[in-house]
Length: 158
Image 1: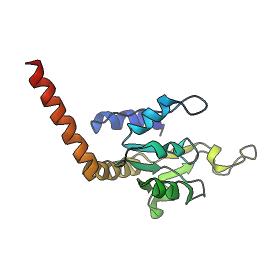
Image 2: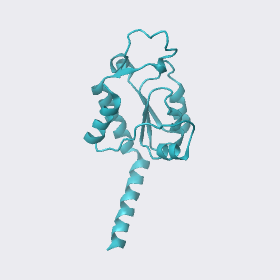
Image 3: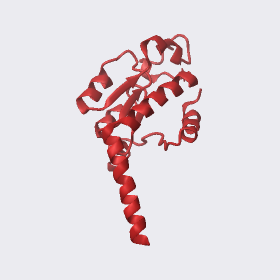
């Protein structure tokens, strides 16, 4: 599976907005703003997951693969106070597989490999994470405030 078209598919089928990628070098205010307005932060180990520090309090992090460093972003998520998700242990070998069965010699670490991701398992994990976020009390409160502000704005326009 190619992740970007699959995420676009999820965006449509789950009525969500998905922003793909934080590009460029160095941390910018735009990157912080994007991270702060993200409810579900998805990435593979080392791909900018430190931006989870800027997530809202109700957000969740989904580390697609920890590249044999299981505590790094799990611990960082705990320190930040956001929920951390990864593949269930019994599904790791089914959910994500390297494109090459044996790591090529010119690729120094697992985080630099390309991976195939099982669509059905990914979709199921995404649904669990989405439900976690949508039921988080701070997310619910924020949505209520947005609806009230929208209603007040409509009333003023009349």
